[in-house]
Length: 249
Image (cartoon, rainbow, N blue to C red):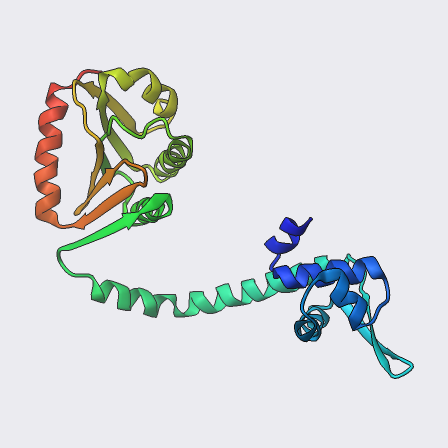
């Protein structure tokens, strides 16, 4: 229960006070402080925030403030208001997005190297790849012999392959002969994908597309090097083409 309340945006102290008021039914500050184990000096502040969220009500009884929980159905109304705010914020962001993109593209240098760590960083690279590639263009992959067994990573790459296929982006992949069974299971269903195999081992995976080269290093934490350079991409393409000629279906 607490995890769900935390997911909708309540803080730990708000959760404790809200559940305390809900259990007590009708109470003053003292019992609420005791039940929630929130410090007395902070209880009023938390009660005020919950009141603003519409989750509790306040009234005077014998000139003493009393608090009572609103119907838990109010949580749905609270969520609906949050969604409306998010929609409004999204609309505002869309209006300024062209200006922000203009600044972003103006700041990109002709040759640029960026380092990303963790799965989230790598995901950012590949979502951008889908965005900048056009239908009919090709992404070239030299697959690493490490990392293919990682479930979260493989689930993500399957999603990326699906997005490429939907956009009609072609993918040519090279993997080690020993990985044939697993890669066919993972990727053979996707259109515009061609996979070949070589006697090649590498702790890294390489993606080449447009003027980009992405080198993924598998380890305790994934590291991805994103290079924006036509010369570097051209050099790696020569290496890919050499291996492609030596490959087998």
